[in-house]
Length: 321
Image 1 (cartoon, rainbow, N blue to C red):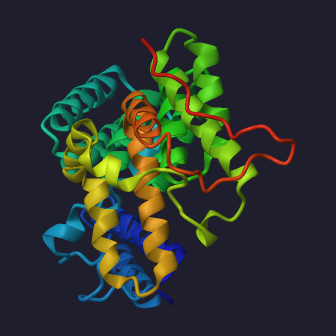
Image 2: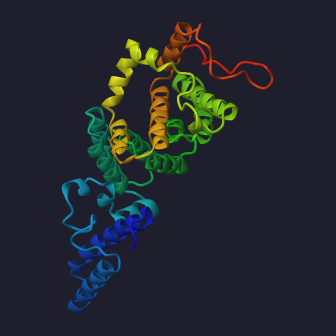
Image 3: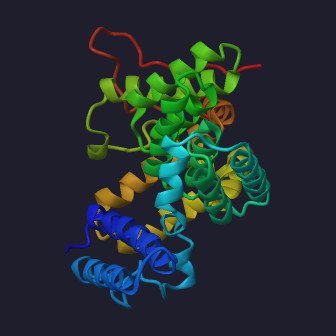
């Protein structure tokens, strides 16, 4: 089998099933022939899916590989907790695990929190809060695609879960999927109309869409638009935000990929994503800095021409009070 994401996920799935079969071997209701058949089935699955000793889903995986939440999925428990009524005891256990995950998030132990939320889901796969919280952990680790998947799972259980819509919008915006982000933020605001964070984030994504429609193909020009980089670098507020962002694991992961980039387009794309990350991280500060830079460079000729109808491009909205 190849090393594509699909086949790798399949390996984790089969490994989970093998763990279930391995437990069945020890069940007293099976005779010796049945146990032998189960062991043969395990060997066949390991051979077909190439789950040999060097495979990253093998039982002897390294500590880093064991941190992957897919190594903590119990398929049988997941089945029972999805299609069989969850007992009050298991719900209580899951709630305790969720609280542990929340504590780990506050301690910035995002991978441990993610694994703890996964264990909570194994005990109660019907609670949308567990998926939404795990989405937050995925986002902190820079895995926005899985954050999207978990937000969708939370919304499948509770379509009116405003926090799940908000986190879905944030994950989409981090992926530069601002059209989907706008829809998600609009749903979040519909359910929580007084939430200013949702409104700010919606405004940021709408601005990106407007800019994209006015200036298609940003890779061909300056990916940061009109931003004066010198003013940005010398602005103490922006420097403080950038310093804080550098401690974000998702940013560290993004910058770590720069070593493998050997073309200018890829480097420009990374710069554009960093700029969007800044605007999503703190829209009010970003807009305020942009306004300050606009004032500082008022006498500098603009590179962007007026719109075809003669009007000027939209300016960032003033910061909210």
